[in-house]
Length: 174
Length: 228
Image: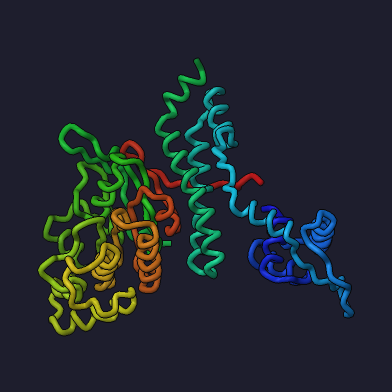
């Protein structure tokens, strides 16, 4: 998650105070990891320094700094470029799962037991996400779906690997 | 917890081909259990043995503590009709009947009078988002609608156990998840135990627990603590 680009996106919607940006960030993207105020203002400061946003005059009032931030043309361009570029697909060929299986086989340990434990852990997480998907708002459901599809892909890989353990053991021990 | 269904060391071969080799499984009352496993692993055969559709060559199947595998066909048939509900992947609706008659079918077969059976069937249409489709025949329903009708039929007689074999296998992902949502919610509401065969992790994730069948043997998986 790119905090600067996400804040730029929120500012593309409308000029906002740091407080509003934090609130919206936490509501849509925080997922239990709220953005610290310090990070919000540090990020806005860097974006202002780089000409991506401009800060209005400080407004009177109590509490944290009250400046309204506005996105610039350069900020809009950067945000649009980021939005259009697909995220690099990450095949995770050297994932922890893969490494553990290969090492287990190399060392003559029970790779199937490890894969079953991993499968159970994946399914437990999928149950949690399914519950979130079922009971949460649409935004939560979409995020849960994203997680579910990725875990589903991992599980298919676990199934396939389990079915090929004997051949894989020969390959890594030869 | 009380086991509603339990298989002990069951084996079954089709001719020379062993399908189950000492499979054991216990399902608690009110639980939703997913049986997973690769194609040809024996998971559907296991389901059919648990439901009394097939009789194992050896081993025992218990339902409410009673031996199911030693019952004769008529007794098992009565049990399936009275206590079990079924949802399969394909072709479950009787094409000559309307949707509401299809839902009412288990009640009609149990001797409930037609008007009473239809009255019992109709609320399921609103419950499963099928309002207005009561008089349609199966050919006039989409795959997702037909599967929801089949689900209503599986649950209408308030079975103690619902057996579902790849219930979303013929549906797209979104429709399949709607069916699963409804199946699990309805079953929990009326305290029905669900035993579900699926090869899809996303479907299994609706269950409380999963068992995996490999080479004709079943094992229940338990997840240990996850490393952070």
